[in-house]
Amino acid sequence: MKLTDLHIHSTFSDGKLTIKEIVDFYGARGFQIIAITDHLCEEETILGKASKFLKKTLTRYNFDEYLRTIKEEGDRALLLYGMLVLPGIELTKNSLSFHRSAHILGIGISEYINADGTIFDLISKIKDQGALAIAAHPVSTKMIEHQTYHLWDKREELFDKFDAWEVASGPHLFDEVQKSGLPIIANSDFHSPKHIESWKTLIQCDLVFEGSRGLKEAIRDQKIELTFYNEPAKIFNKKSQVDLEIFAY
Image (cartoon, rainbow, N blue to C red; front, top):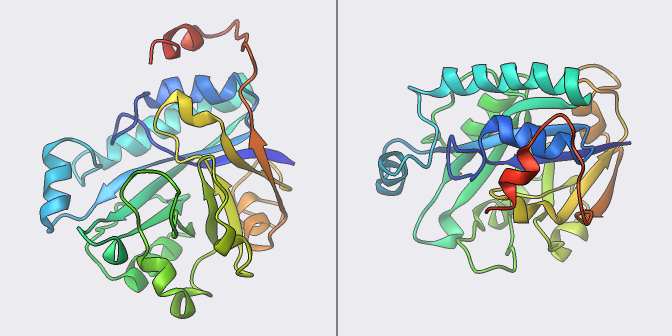
């Protein structure tokens, strides 16, 4: 079973750590599969334009650099930690209304996607790249933050479109998702080191994305277990000084 977190944000959007720091942070803790999933906001909406102005979103102009950085750090992670690092995005459709807001994770993506499309279009574009489509925090996260209910409101139309629905996005399990019968996955929605203590997923797969024993098929076949990750009292990592750095946050 591979200890996995497929919802992680870096300084390419609104995360506190660089991709290199994330690799060392998770690698030092024995994670075996992670995905970097920075926000990719709509281009044409006011909130999307504000995110671009504030440099809290990926853009079509830095997307190639983003993928290249993940590839370079992924090669290092595999060699140093035996950890698979996947390229991902969080397509971010925000509205002042929680019921019109929706976030979609694309795991294993290889090309830029314009987030201004419809939910059905975006799922299709993710899957056209051979990537996984995951409904991110579709119900209340039980925290004081912007909520995204649109996917859950449309779950009867979308039930067979997503590969999985987040049953946790941080420290709280979502009871309604857990009881729904939908395929599930638990992630941290990591933005800073304090978010590491959260629900995660153990996945029965090889250390590859594709193939009959790969991560993608294991999630689709629900070869998973949920686990809560508690931070050890002290992490020793001789190969990196990242732990000394993260305690400053």
